[in-house]
Length: 331
Ligand SMILES: Cc1ncc(COP(=O)(O)O)c(C=O)c1O
Image 1: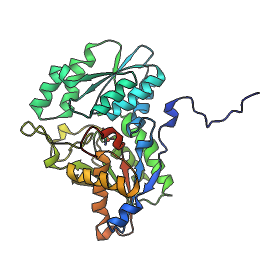
Image 2: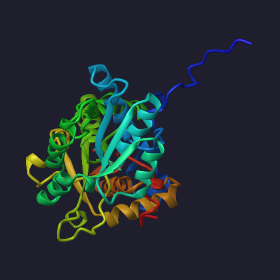
Image 3: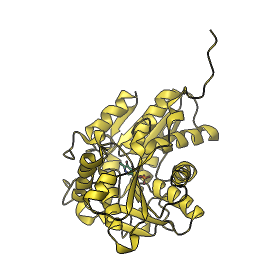
Image 4: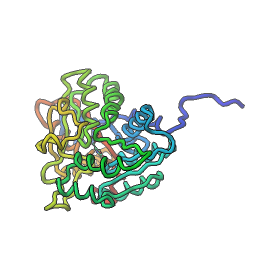
């Protein structure tokens, strides 16, 4: 019997990236007596369960197109987890080797998942120059990347360092996919975009697209409050994984992929507030999301409470799944 050809049977997980659904968290809105809509974009429904699958696919394809990624090349990336996981899944499906450098102390699920996909995980503590830079600069990631280039990437042959902090394919894929998906799925009726900021790729690309369609869309970035940033004096503070502070830290410390022109407002969220919101939506609407999603929902809640936002539609990016935090005290 000849088989019917259908494009509904995919041949690679890269075909499953994106087109994530929007969900209005109606029960949460009621419980909090909100008069604005909070709509989550469920990025945990990507094939490797986070928003970073989008940039993993995009950065690999861009490197292939540039001719710097071929069979036998080892891919290098520095990440707090989700980019490593997305890349590990894509690299497995495309047959590439991947080595992920991860800061010590991120949740153990992340390391396990990356290894399960067959990639190698190197803790920052194995590279003394990285730890030294983190200590000397009190957590300046841009400085760490520069040291990584010199002390690791440039010393090896046959490797490609994707560098999500500076790689233009990162914001670009959000401009090409995340933004248009939100625009289409809301029929162009979106008033506010809320996104937590790490590399800045999500907010810069998605925000720029939405503003290109309607300059009045308000783009709100979420960053950790001062009490939620680990320092040399207070190393045990629980941080919002994947999210960094980018205001008041000096321009040289802001990643190249943060486009400040796109961001209209910044809301600071403490880790405890992010936890509370993530716990609340799990119980109210049955969505299990990570800490940065909680932070974004908490920020969206503050916006929804403002009288001027009555009746408005707030689309909130929910970057990853709560399952990635079961070893932490989130749940
Ligand atoms: C869990 C999580 N939330 C939010 C972000 C921020 O996304 P972006 O890097 O696009 O700013 C990241 C990035 O690493 C992340 O891992």
